[in-house]
Length: 179
Image 1 (tube, one colour):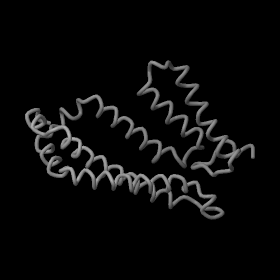
Image 2 (spheres, one colour; image 1 turned 90 degrees about the horizontal axis):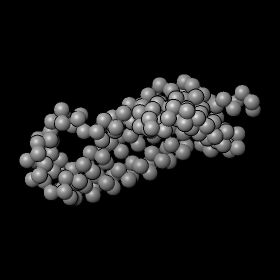
Image 3 (spheres, helix red, strand yellow; image 1 turned 45 degrees about the vertical axis):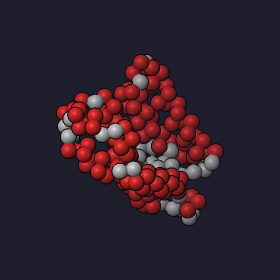
Image 4 (tube, helix red, strand yellow; image 1 turned 60 degrees about the horizontal axis):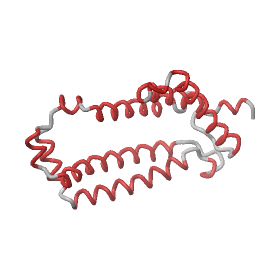
């Protein structure tokens, strides 16, 4: 973004423009999660559906995103966003460390949701996602710590949800071999 344009927009109006983008992204993601949740199997009705909790969270997120959209629109968000976009520079945008981190987490989450979930047991898919995310964002934790946490957390949640609460997990569970 052009620095002169950036300085001419006050901080509150700038936040409203950013909130407008955020609200649209939140609503789009919540709709996508809702659609995927509705497509999940329901072996014994909704109470046995692994997509029930993601559907509830996605519905809640949609209404939060809608509230943010309305608030940002009332705070002059649309004209501000248009002004911000007029001075937009892709090079400066991609050079921002916060943007790089956001793009990494979007990429890793997309791989997890689209390629791993449902294809691999829950614990393996979760472990691969955690290992990848920690490798990108927490290298100072050390490879042994990253590996152990990436192994233990999915096993704990898989055991808790599948064995203790008898919830179905997307992509089955390695605990299904023992049940």
